[in-house]
Image 1 (cartoon, rainbow, N blue to C red):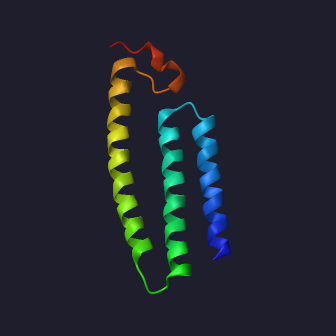
Image 2: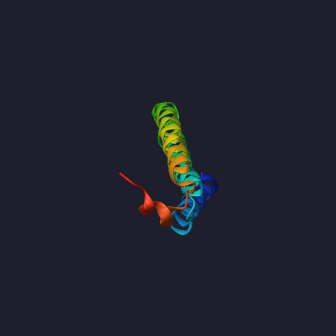
Length: 99
């Protein structure tokens, strides 16, 4: 169990670093997905450790995966529209958008 929690912690902090350090919107989205996947891994590990016969952690994980897939689809659509308008997806240049 400890190994999975270490892997989940490394994934989460790598996602936090990528979210803070990157300027590209797609890289930020990938970092956010990495953080969500580490939370899903924690759901499964704690469910298996605390309640081995129950499946609540697995259902939470499946629900979270579905929500993150919808969030990713919407975010990619927004990024594509931003690219069509300003031909750039760097976060520091998004103040040049027109209303």
